[in-house]
Length: 297
Ligand code: NAP
Image (cartoon, rainbow, N blue to C red; front, side, top):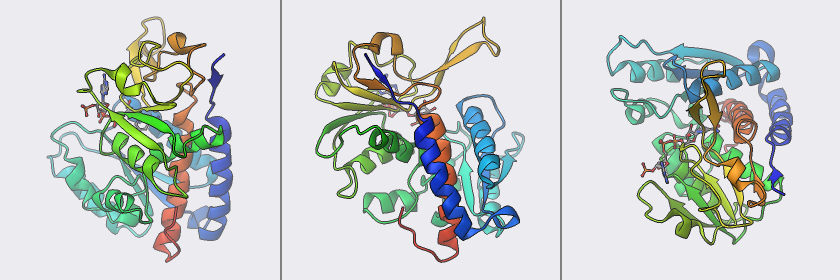
């Protein structure tokens, strides 16, 4: 029997912490504001965006969308981020990623001060993470670890694997998992698209954090028996009979892993809602940091 690691109770616990933090930083018209910058196109970020809107409404976080003008030149993204960085009514800024060319995500993020970079994906926050200093870390990475901790999956000293090495998901997750006490202290293997034999790389892992965005990559032929899978990946596969013509799936093939993996996060309903809840907490924290409060996570 494979345990389903639902995100809902983890998200609810985070929401309670966010509500308590909001009481100290401001509510109603004084509540922190999150600005979400995106292309306005269908895709995984659009799903994430709908979750952000719902969570902001539920928690009383002010929320605003900034849709990029597709006709504007490559400098438009940096200009939007620069404007939001200078806007005192905005405490947190999130930029859709990954973004296709000609958008230059990395240089746009250089326009944003670290305290407003609520997804912790700018160079300064990633550097702080590398050095074990306080700052924002990517919401999805904290969410994946929060799920593991909530369900008591052992991390300290344990062999875990991260599938994916992007600078915004896989790599920061590996860094967070490696952090010394009070961090998880895990022993981490990182796999990627050039990993020749995925099964061999994952063979000793007791927990696999999958962030590849490759539907059904993880089957029982690559996951060791009894391992737990925290599925961060989100991708679509054609489903002509469904509204929209697609169905959203993770990296794990849940049919193949049923009765083989010890535990698995569902998609949807696993990492996604916890990521949104973590982002709201990060936004409240950003407001506290900008008001001169502590920056410890
Ligand atoms: P990305 O930039 O496309 O990176 C994907 C990573 O996976 C790359 O490092 C790639 O390797 C690796 N990879 C791809 N195919 C692989 C394979 N067959 N075997 C092993 N590794 C493989 O994507 P991302 O921004 O990191 O996001 C990763 C996934 O997380 C996406 O599905 C995204 O939608 C999802 N996500 C979910 C949430 C959530 O809330 N649930 C939030 C953010 C992102 P190379 O480096 O060699 O190319």
